[in-house]
Amino acid sequence: MSTTGRAWKYGDNINTDVLFPGKYTYTAQGRAEIASHALEDLDPAFVKNVKPGDVIVGGSNFGCGSSREQAASCLVYNGVAAVIAESFGRIFYRNAINFGLLVITCPEAARAIQSGDEVTVDLARHRILTGSGEFAFPPFSASVGQILQAGGLVEYVKTKLRETA
Amino acid sequence: MPQTFAQKALARAAGFDFAEVGQVVDARPDVVLSHDNTADIRRTWLEFGQGRVTIPEKLAITLDHAVPAPTTKHAQNHAEIRAFVQEQGIRNAFEVGRGICHQVLSEEAIVLPGQLILGADSHTPHFGWMGALGAGIGRTEVATLWATGELWLRVPESMRIVLDGPLPPGVTAKDFALRIIGDLGADGGLYASVEFSGSGIESMSLESRMVLPNMMAEFGVKTAYIAPDEKVFDYLARRLARRQTTDGGRTVTEAEVAIRNSQLAANAIYPDADASYIAEHIYAAAELEPYVACPHSVDKLATLSQVAGTRVQQAFLGTCTNGRLEDIAAAVEVIRGKRVAAGTRFLVIPASSQVLQDALRLGYIEALVEAGAHIGTPGCGPCMGNHMGVPAPGEVTISSANRNFQGRMGTKNAEIYLASPAVVAASAVTGMICGPGNL
Figure 1: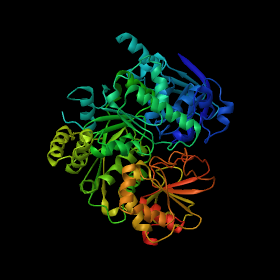
Figure 2: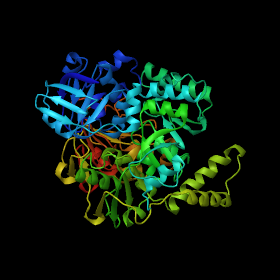
Figure 3: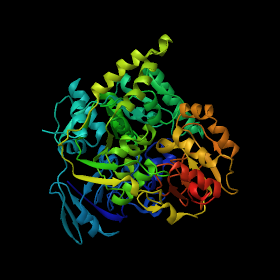
Figure 4: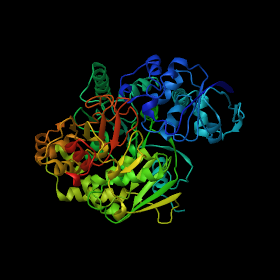
C-alpha cells in the first residue's frame, strides 16, 4: 500500500491547541465541524487548500499537549494520509493510530521534506519517497500494526468483541 | 531482574510478576477517568453495541472542564453525561462545582498507591504524587476500556530526577518543574516514566508533590512517580475510611484509619535499588530560584528577574497544577492588605469544593476578594480556553497553570506566562510580572 500527496511542513512542538483549539473540544461534533477547525491558530490556509492524500511534516514532539482526539481526527477528516515527524507526543501518536492516520517517525525525512514537495509513503517497503531522496522508517509495532490494519481502534475492537462473543 | 516502578506497576496491571522495558502488555486499569468528554466517549462506545459498560465500578467521571456550562451546547453535553451516569449506575461521578478531576479523585481516595489509572486527560500522570501509575489516553481508548476493560500499553524506559535538599524560601515545586522542562526541553521526557527522589521530595508537602507529576505532562512523559510514604498513606487512609463509612454516618475511628493505612502501604510499589534508568538528573535545591515560562512554550524558561516588569492584564490562580489550599495560602500571604492593580484582573479558581471550603474557613477567600480578586466555580476555568476568564487579543496573562501554548486560553493573539502562585499574586498587585519581594 502506498499513498502520495503534497507536504505541509511545520516546526517543532506543534501542539494540540494549534492543531485543534480546546474551546471546541466539548461541543464540536461530526466530521465537517471537526475538520473545519484544523490548524485554525497555526495556518488558516491549511483547511482551504488541503487535498486528500496530503502529508503533514513536523519537527520534534509533534502533537504534544492535550489528550484531545480531534487533534488527530481533524487531520483525518481533511483527508491527510500521514504525519511524518522527528518525534511525536505519545497520546497524539496513539490517537492518530486509533483513527487510522499513519504517524511516521523519520527524522531524516522530516528534515529533508519542504512544504509543497510531493511525498509518497510506501507502507509495504517502509520507505518515504521524495524529490530529495528516499528514506527508510522502522515498521510499526505489532499492536499498532493490527489497529492500522483494521482501519482504526473502533473497527479493531468491534472485530475482537465479535470473536469473543 | 530488578525493575523500575513502571515495570512493576504495568506488570501488576497485566497480571504478571515481571515486565520488560519495551514489552507491550494488555493492562487492566483500576480506574478509568473521563470528564466533560464523556458524552463523546459514549457516542463511540455505542458503536460497540453494548447495553452496559463492562466495568462501571472502575469509571470515574467529573464535570470540570467547562463548568458551570458556558453555552447551551456545553449544557447539553453535561446533560448527556448525567443521563449516561444515571443509566449505567456510575457511582464515582462528580457534579459541576465539585472540582478538577485529578484533585477530586485524590481527595476522594478513588485512586490508590500502586494502582493504574488511565484517563482521557493528558495530566493523568498527576497521580504519581501517591505512587500510582497515571497515563493519559484518547477518548476512543476510554470507550474501548468501557467495552473490554483492557488496553495495550508499552512498558516505558525510566528516568530519575533527584532533588537534593529542601527548596529555598520563595522557590516552589512549580519552579523546580519549570526548571527541569526548561533545561531538558518540552520533549525531554518523551515516552519516559520519570521517578522523582531525593531529600527535597521527601520533605515536600503533599500538595507540592502533586505539582511535579502533573507538570511532567509538559515534559512529554507517559507517567511520573514519587515513592509514597507515611504522609501519603495517612492522607488517603483517612479519606478512604470516611468515604467507606459515610453510608452509616458514623465517625471514623483511628483504628479504622490504621487498618487502611497498612493496606495502602502493603499495596505500594517501589522501584528496585538496582533498576536501570536511561538518565539521571540531579538538582541541588539551593541553586534553584523562581522561574517563569514565557509564551508560547513551557520550555521557554526565564528567571523571574529576566521577565520582571512585563505588563499583565490578567493573573490567574488555579488549575490542577496550582489551585490547592497551599497555593491560595501563598497568594493570600502576598496580597493581604494590598490591592489588585488598576488595569489588571486577578481570577482565583479553587481546584475543588473542598479547597474552596477550607479557604473560606481560613478567611482566605475574604482576604482575596477584599484585595480585589474575583472567585470562580471550582473547575478548570479558562485554562483551556472554554470560558470564564479568557483573555482579549493582545492581552497578557500570568497563570499558575501548566500550559501556555498559543491559543491555549481561547485567544490566538494572547500571551501566557506560567509561574508559581506567589508570583501570580504579586504580579496581580503591581500589574507587572514580579515576585513577592518586589512589593
